[in-house]
Image 1 (cartoon, rainbow, N blue to C red):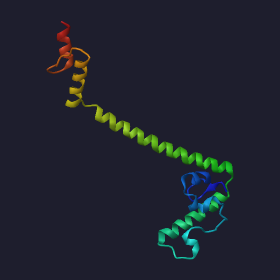
Image 2 (image 1 turned 180 degrees about the vertical axis):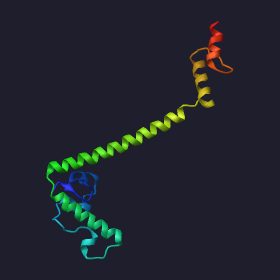
Image 3 (image 1 turned 135 degrees about the horizontal axis):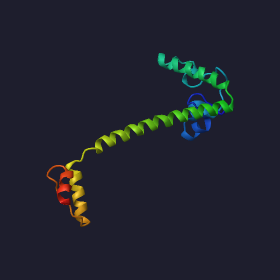
Image 4 (image 1 turned 135 degrees about the vertical axis):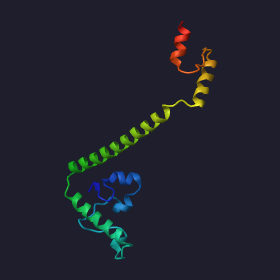
Length: 139
């Protein structure tokens, strides 16, 4: 068993992340075998613990039927989904940054004026539209 049905990843990744104790220390689990606190005969802490245990056993049974190539495909699909999510988050962040950058704040204007003065570049404050000021200066 190279696949961890608990964390839905390769077992070496579980060892690398330090969570291999949760998936029987990296040892393959027999089909339908229970692990963790619910296997000790103690009653589950709640309905969600029982449901989680059933989901884990079902996932173990499903994964036990898969070959290495199919597990690699599943890992690829999981990674692709993570990358898609990250791409969407980054695109949303870019949109938010562009929205904030569309307006020139007085602080931005002061910073630019300081830079122009520092480099010795002359500039003119236009009373209204810069286009009209440029037309006036071009005459």
